[in-house]
Length: 120
Image (tube, rainbow, N blue to C red):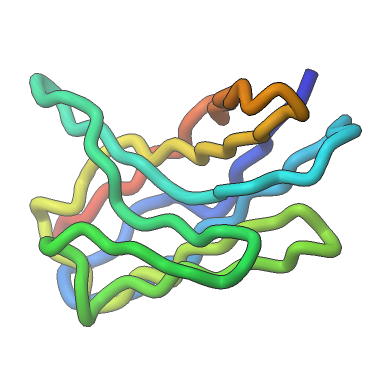
């Protein structure tokens, strides 16, 4: 069973920056995709950004040019550098990881979430 532990959330003023980290533990398999989702109050969870083990990235349109996802495969850690934060970025941010098994089954794992609040 893979556990994802996030850190780095908090309160920041509009225009500020935060860096989220997420480390996977207890993984006996190679992690394929690692990334971030977020969920604001009253809204559905949405994809923010992710990176595959091969380095391919994907970003939601609302964070392009402001957020950067990076990854340390050896440490099973993914980061999200968030710049130029806006009030609408306020949400609980969840780390997400997938592992593809030998039978092509894809298992999904989630972190416990970390609160990001953008407010003056």
